[in-house]
Each structure stands twice: as C-alpha cells, then as structure tokens.
Image 1 (cartoon, rainbow, N blue to C red):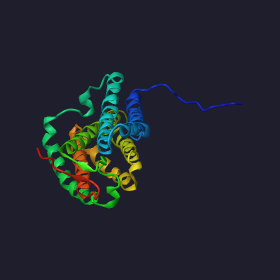
Image 2: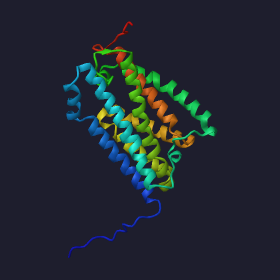
Image 3: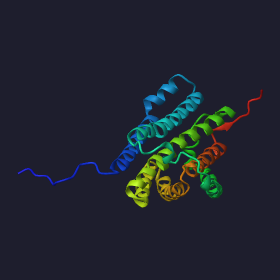
Image 4: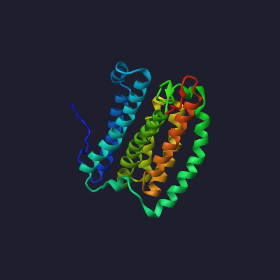
Length: 250
C-alpha cells in the first residue's frame, strides 16, 4: 500500500525569515549569473559596436544588472513579505556607536588584503580573466566606468549576502547556523571562478559575517570587497601584455 511519512508542512514562527531570504539569494544570483554570462546578450553588444566599445558596454551592463538583481529586487520583496523588518534592519544604516570600529577594521583589512591581491593579480592565470573589460585601449573614461561598475555591483552583492541573507536568519535560527548558510552560498557563487577563489571565500565570508554582525552594518564588507576588486582589476590592467592605458590629450 502506498504510504508516506507524516510531515508537518505548516509554517512556524520565524520560518519565513529563513526561507524567503535564502531562496531569494539563490534565485536572484542565478538570474544574475546566467544573464551576465548569456551569449545572446553578449552578442548583441558585439554585433553593433567595435570590440573595445562592446567590451566596456557589456561588462558595465553586467555590473549594473547585478546591482538591481541582487541589491534591489530581493530587498523589495523582503520589505513586502517581511514587514517587521525595515531597510536598516538589513544593515543598510549608519550606527554612530560602531563607526570607529568599522573604520578601524576597514583600514586594517585593506592594509592586509590589498598587498595580497596585488601580488596575486599579476599572475598569468589571473590575467586570463581580469580586467573583465577586455578593451585593448583604456582611457580615463574606461577606468571610471570600471571602478564605478565594480562599486555598484559589489554594493548589490554585499547587500544580498551580508544584509538580506544574514540578519533575518540570525534572528530566526541563530548566529552560527546563519553564518553557515551564508558561507555555503557565498563560497558556492565562486565555484565558476576556480578552486582558489572558492576556498578563499570561506574564511573571508566568515570574517565578513562576524564583522557585519558586530558593526550592525554592511559597510565593512562592502568597502573591503571594493578595495579588493579595484586592486585586482587595476593591477591586472597594469600588467596585462595586450591591454594599454592611454592619456587622451585635450
């Protein structure tokens, strides 16, 4: 006779605080990833522009789309379906009591990771993928677009992982289970970038989660991540043998 085990499928207090942010983080990262890596979308840029222009426009599109798909859409849904949480409850706030703590850790972590990223970024295996804008000639405009694109993308990215995916889960399942879920998903998003970045995301994710909870804001994670991305990108620009920066004379 056909039988099943008895399972209580009813929603319990706090279940939505765990379920919704976790599912949204997964779904919207998937949407971002497959859109950013869509060959059809990429071909549209390259079919109507020169190679250098297409590369700049396509990469900026992926950054801009990442900001909205990971930083804007999930929080809107959470604000609707988790009305007990305001946007400041997700770490998008300034807390005077923890400002000095945040500044110290931002400076300290940047002093640690920037030299490490700089020396790693010069390696040939890194130059295969970075800078992501593959234009052969860079100008001041390209540099600005690259820097701004990384900043808005990482704001959305960190707001998703260190905001939406962290604070509600801490309230519903506790600090360490929430951090475990956060690290698992955060590390998994780095799998396409190789073993080094995937493994490196584990301790980095742990540190950023702890500092986010200690400060009550996402700013440490966001600014340190931006410093790492800019260092990697502009170091790769400097040492890439096929990419050059030129100053356009007025």
